[in-house]
Image 1 (cartoon, one colour):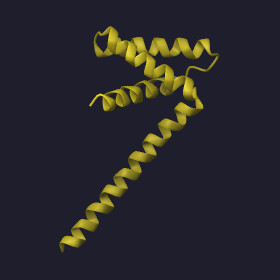
Image 2 (spheres, helix red, strand yellow):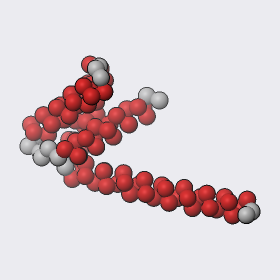
Image 3 (tube, one colour):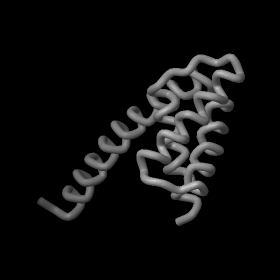
Length: 101
């Protein structure tokens, strides 16, 4: 196998993986948008920031963030969809970590 063939095979593999990953993340993003949108994402970022400030174990911080986001959605009259709330919180954690890297 030539270097060019190996390089092309590697690029095809990476593109396939990226496509799968983007499809996966796109589903999560669609779920978040459909179940709270900007209110949900803003609440998740605020909740994760507060949980990090207050400290505790990972489980305690996650529970605090879920409670905070749920309270915000309820106050806004929006549905509380568990997987959208959890996804938004995890996305907020990833975003905050990336910003602080």
